[in-house]
Length: 633
Image 1 (tube, rainbow, N blue to C red):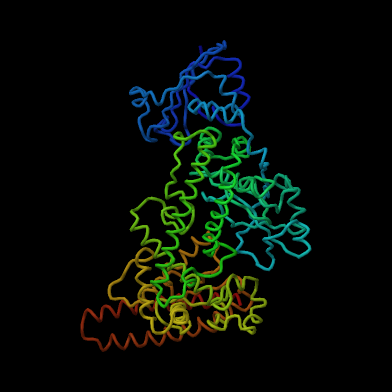
Image 2 (cartoon, rainbow, N blue to C red):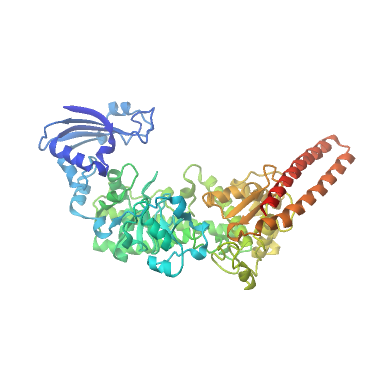
């Protein structure tokens, strides 16, 4: 007799398959007590998950071991108390030979006989959609970028082969690299250097470019490592893929819809509970999922998949993090009021969320029926796993009540409008042309776009330098240009109403409200204190609008569009903004000194003295900043 406490990983991991097969064929498993979460409360309860194994050296044919599952109890529960209380639902009797019915022989004692039979008698995912691991670069800092960092004219996102990339003299191609939990479509963030020279270097680094014949092919991808749910996504043609962004390659459009829908179903989740319980979804785990779909069901799932893709792709492309982003969703519906535009956008998002949820639940019912698991899998889809960004509950999680989530969604949508406006000011976007307009390098070709009338309706900034100031020192600062944008899009008659709504919305989450502050001052405060922080989150700490700051006193700050930054940018920043601001601060300091001298009310005099002290700090800071700029020109 042998009894020991071990990590539970031996029961499931593919790397320990041979050990399990040896145990099943040579030993007698008398008992397993799967403790799972909180095995040792003083340690990390998610990582240190244990099981108690009691076995005999001699196998007993037909012996039914006793298996107890304590994982159904809350993660923080005292497992000793749970065990002593006992539960018939947590206790299973099973012949260990049945574990061999499932490829890899995981010790999945709790699954139904029907699911076990499905594994034994069905095709696998691998048979209809070969699953492959992609390449590791060996040096991500050198070869990888987020797509918005690169010169877009050097980016090829629709190639069919590396030769096509080379013949077009392109450098960057999309690279599936996993990412956050996202189903159906998205996480299209990274690009890899794949021009001739970099390709040759990659072929000798990392894992030396395996599965080369599958690069650029349409596929289904997922995030191999996740802290939550498994999510499969359609990956269009033109992508390469990584080890953590592995892919499956169905041979037909029908199989694409069936495999992707199956992988996002509750049936697949049920299978992955024991195929990949550590939430590390390796290619070997995905290959083993059984594929069992009736002819009658195929046409329904296929139709559903096209509807799902319409929703998921439209949602992904409604945000700036997509290279197929066209314009702010608040501009898509002709309205005079930003409030009404937002209401239309929110209503559209709710309808899409409901529709996607209903389709996913229909798919779950179809797969449950096909696998004989009716009543065993929950076909309902919680709101938080309807993975479109128009769904606040998915986007933020169920950490607050729905009203609070709605307020946050409203606030962030208006923050996104501000960011889109900055893009139009910088020339990245245009009211006269949908989609990404300018994202080259060093301002090359920008003057030609201006000459062609690309920015006729709302002129782009001439130098790609946009001041962010807490006071109105420049006529073309970010706040004034935002007001001009709102006037251009929604009209002069509704300007103040719209500015009021923007300010009100920003104060719901992005910034705190301030009593007695005008709408434009609120927007100015958001731009000078919070915008860049939000921008860093949106662009994953790789901003496209660089913040230049004189220092902690914020005497001068401005944004510079990285694709327009050139050898003359710093000189222009100094001559057009820093030097003039120095003179303006001097004039204002003299005025404050005079006001202090003439002021008789003590409280007001102290306020002015405090303001002057702050101004003196800013003057000193600005002088130092000016010196630094002068040295770099």
